[in-house]
Image (cartoon, rainbow, N blue to C red; front, side):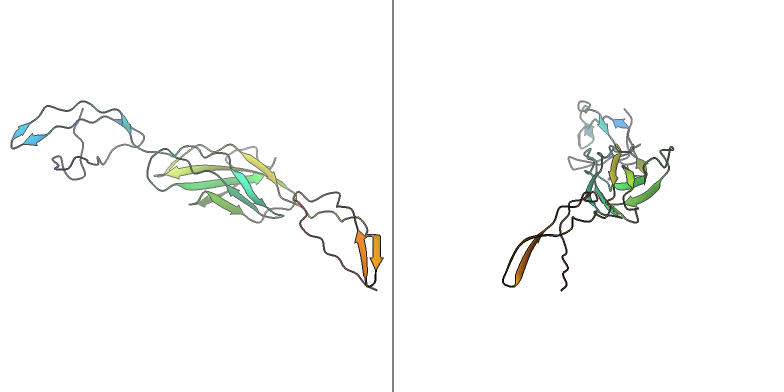
Length: 193
């Protein structure tokens, strides 16, 4: 066991201390002893192994919280390992089947665990993955998530007569054959005489 460089020097009056200048992702053991006047006690027992922080854990597989014709909003859970320090993320995405090299594609950095990917092509399938960084050290990439941007829904069926009354006509139509990959939320009706 070697001496370490303590934040406030080797002799403290407090019952806690921070060891600095340690290697990342390295295990360390600690012992402590007390002093009264010039007399020192025996060393304490040796602590369990404490490991300094390094790269954060691999993020979970991203999910699409919103999909439109040209945008996918991604989210993923914040990796946790009990270590402090700001975590940054690198979002990597590409059009499905476009890259054989896993280190290719478009990469965007973010400080939050969500990211809105814009400028995508309508109706195309994309692959997404994320990795995390802390102290300049990168985790492995997450598992890949694949999704397809939505397309415009097909036209609904031709309107048909249902009933009529004084000043009104009720019509109906069939749903579109294709919703475009996202539920149809509205219909717009035009009429002329």
